[in-house]
Image 1 (tube, rainbow, N blue to C red):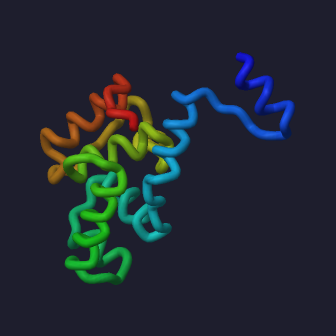
Image 2: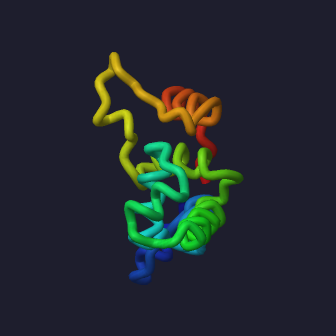
Length: 129
């Protein structure tokens, strides 16, 4: 407490160490580009790389590069976890927000991974960094 008072009296800002560490950690994380956010939104809707490429008029290979970059930046292990955690962290909106509570439709390509995503979102079991 005394350290905080001294810092503020000198015109400085004071942050407790645990908060300063979290701020530094957050600042070190690379920000997603606008294109990566577009790709992420489409991932969350269950689109394949080919479908995303067609929609954005880019190659499937470019989509793969974006997905790899997204996974690295969000520090997750796969595309499903990337979409789930992006929704949980508020980076993108949930595809369920536009769906009726009684009619949730998952694309066939989502399979079991899509169901896991829905469960993680609904129960808040996404890793938060």
